Image 1 (cartoon, rainbow, N blue to C red):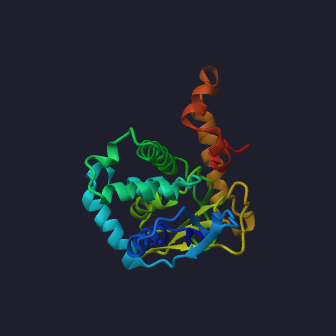
Image 2 (cartoon, one colour):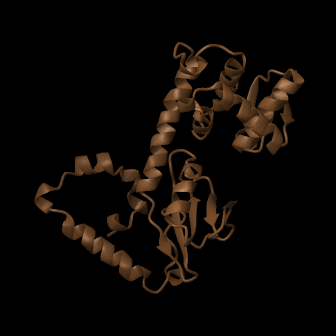
Image 3 (spheres, rainbow, N blue to C red):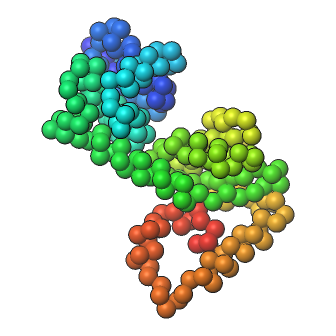
Length: 256
């Protein structure tokens, strides 16, 4: 019976699967996160429990064998959540560990070409996360932002916001994937909010939970944005190019 390895949706869990494949001498027909299983009546599903030490051994060995510019290529590609991405990364890792010269830039290999292309898209989306996040201040002096990135790029923004808002508690919440990152002034942790006290379509916090002056500052910002725009020079096409319309519903300045 063919084997399909499953894991807990995390990159650490995936790397643990890679470790176990080498340890068992196994070559699964597929690797799937438990959230994206596609049942196969002819397949044996083997769940691999995530193990930080095993994942670290794989990650360390991989980075030692790859040039610095591509150290994080598998991680970026993993965040794309593309269907079948796990097997593409698995085959890529096997090439790297086999010692093949310049395996990470061998674009004649469809897996290598695909991983490089999708990693660029993920990194670009990660940069947009730094541009289009708008926090709302609550009565508990907590800054909240809900957003729905195309890829799972919130992990790429954590260090930036830890440095920028080191003295503020904040949550960045992925509305599509239903999880977020909470910073408590000391460290960050992944959270899932069971009580959604915000609009699940645009991340807007309920008015009764906002800090007293928040609505005033939001209106002030919208007024400023409106006044610095010159109506005669308005170029919607250029605006959409630099400010994609899919982000508008999260931006204070784009609200009526």
